[in-house]
Each structure stands twice: as C-alpha cells, then as structure tokens.
Length: 144
Image 1 (cartoon, one colour):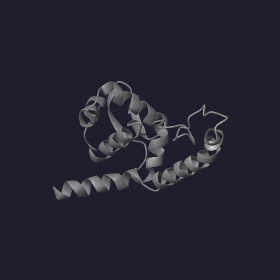
Image 2 (cartoon, helix red, strand yellow):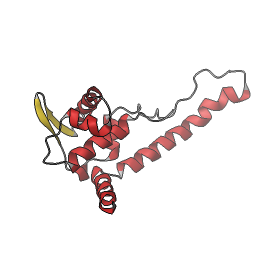
Image 3 (cartoon, rainbow, N blue to C red):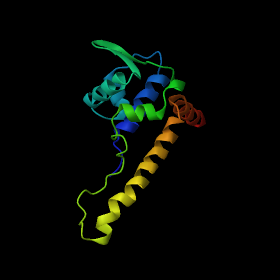
Image 4 (spheres, rainbow, N blue to C red):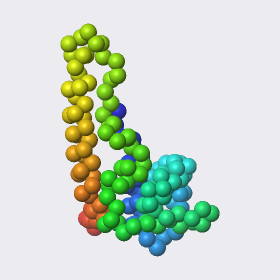
C-alpha cells in the first residue's frame, strides 16, 4: 500500500497552473495532463480551493494559484488532499493476540516509531515549496 496518488496529482495540478500562466486552464486541460477523468480533477480542485491554494470560479474557465508558489509548501498540498489523518500515516493492525508476547506489546512498540517517521516526512515536505518543484521541472525541460 502507498500514500494516495491524490498527493502527487495535487502537486501536478498546482505545478501546471503555475507553469502555464496565461493559458485558460480548465479541469479538462488538467485532466489531459494528469491523464485522468475531469471529475477526478474537479474533486481535487475542490480540496485545493478549500485549503486556499487555488482560486476557481464556478462556470468560468480559469484556475489560478491563490498564493505565490514560494508560499505553498508540499506539506500544504499533503494536508489539502487528505492523504492521511494526523499521526496515522502508518496503520497498526488492531487485533494482535493479547496472550502472545509480541502481540501484547507490538502496538506500543511501533506506534511511537511510526509517529516519529511521519513527523520527519512532514518536516521535509514543509521545507519544499511549489516554486522548488516548478524550478526543477523547468530545469529538466531546458535540458531536453
């Protein structure tokens, strides 16, 4: 199992909006780039709008960033698209056998490790901005 692809799609949507400034961006346009159904994109756009990352007006084509790309972190995107609940990136099986030596203690042993790992990942995401992503994409385009 992996983190929901909504996170990567959210980054994709925001990056494309930033890169293609001046182009009228619609959910169909974004869906073509992501290679998915426009309904999926509209659902994602609702999440990004609710989080204050994009501006969308119903019935009018055109989406834009609500903030400068250097002010949007990947952690903002991660939170916006409901990838996981707070401190629940890793699941712990709920019913280990209570009479088993390992089963009795596994949850209390691994839970703090899982929480620390999630917090470390979230710290890394907080230090990367949409501008960093876009600049990396643009540097790769320049090489091709």
